[in-house]
Length: 399
Image (cartoon, rainbow, N blue to C red; front, side):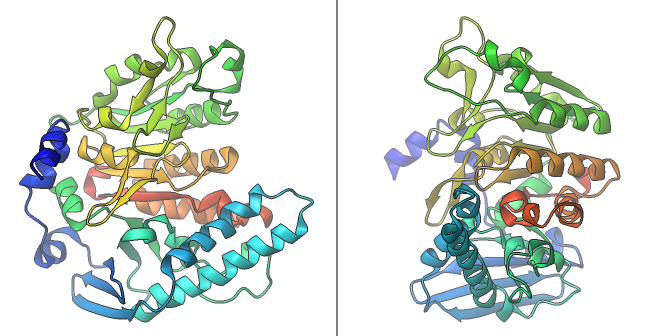
């Protein structure tokens, strides 16, 4: 423990939170953190029992669910049912059917096991979910509340998203800290966004061991976000790491439309600055911990930014989580390799609704519903929209 604490001390904000912050109590959650229509669902996965703590303004219950099914296996098959559907060759109808069946079967079973026993009501319009273990890999809004009437008609699927606004939290304590701790300064500027890998600049990129494909929608995304919210953007060769970080703490909303990597050496990629060593064009997770952020919202239009290492008692240690310790109140992050077209459209829709003063987690759920209402049946498959989730505190500071 002494050696571990010595290593973690290099990440001052994480160290201070981990060893110097009192744990949030049920009273804190009920009286200081939740609104009347909000319900926190905190999951704890034991060897033989699954505990769910339901906390609301007027409600506190603990539900005990037998852990007599393979949660890890069902989560794995559920995710493969989503991502595998579009990784298959179009001509491979057998794999299409297998992945579709895996999604429908496991999403419905996970709903019946994890959500149905909680007796949620329409008054619980906003769910704040604190997952545990492999449940961090599940976008609950893509769970099916009943069997579809017509398999493959994704527009008509009964997604949990249609019943509730859903956001997530790393823990009640982190949520409380994000709510209660003011920023050092109140940033006056709105949006700060970057799109280093727009297709226009593909030929300008240097050869590198870090090879990043073009993101055809990224420049459109940041330009449309700026048109809605105002602010400033960097595209292509302008979007270098040092220039972006210099002004990072003066904006309320930060948008990364770029590539990211999720693991212990996770990073966000910037345009290769001339004369700089390759690694210095990347913002690594360990660097994020020591940033000084004043952002109310950080949006990752980047693949797998919400994934990382699952650690017992800690949850998901990820690139996105590091931004919480750096001062971001709320995050929009991703759970798999997102579709460039749908992801950019959903993010721009979020910006439109933020301008209307809608809190970010409501804006994201509303943007997903808007996508489902206007897209084709094929594009209503969860792979296109369910991988982006909202994490953190989205109260008055969003406004």
